[in-house]
Image 1 (tube, helix red, strand yellow):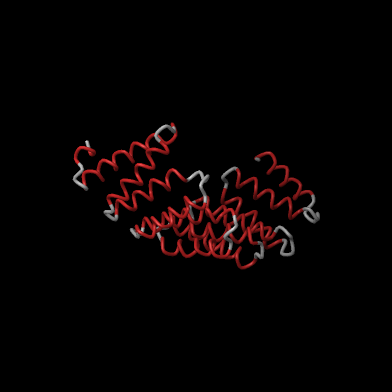
Image 2: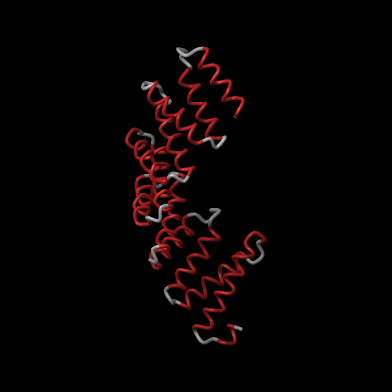
Length: 231
C-alpha cells in the first residue's frame, strides 16, 4: 500500500487534469486507510469531495471519511460522517451499514438507548441486510448494559432462533442465561446454563464459556437450595 500510494501521488503530480485524477486521489485514501494512516486518509477523501464534486466516487469518499473516524475511535465524528452518508445515499446496503455503524458508535460512547434506536432502524428498514443480524445481537448487548434484562433475554433468544449459525451464538446463549440470572429467574437460568454447557463443553474454543456456565449453574442450584446439585 505504501508503494501504491506513492505511485498514485506521482501520477496526480504528473497529470493533475487527468480524467482519472479523482480515482487516483480516492485510491490514495484507500491505501492510507489500510496503512492505518487515518488522518492522511481523511485528507485524501475530503479532497475527492471538494476537488471533484461530480465524481462518481464522491459518496465512497464520504464513507471513507466515516470509516477512518470510526477506526480511530473518534465516534462523535464518525456519527456525523455516517449521517452525511445517509443524507446522500439511496443504496440500501450502504444505508444499512451506515445505520449499524452509527449505532455501534453510540454503543462505544456508552449511549446505549441511542444505539438501540439505530439498530432498530436497521431491523425495520433493512431486515434482509447483512447488518440486520449484527444489529439484533448488538441490540441485545445494549439492553443488557442498560440492565433491561427481560428485554435483553428476549432479543438474544430471538437472535439465536433467527440466526442459528451465527459466529456470536455461543456468547448470545451465555448472555441470555445471564439475563435470566440477573432477573433472579433461577430455574430458567439453570436450564439455560445447562444448554450452554451441553452445546459447548467439548468445543476447545469455548472451554472458558462452558466453565463460566458451569459455575453459574452451581449458583442457580444454591439459590434454589438444591445443595446436592450445587456441590
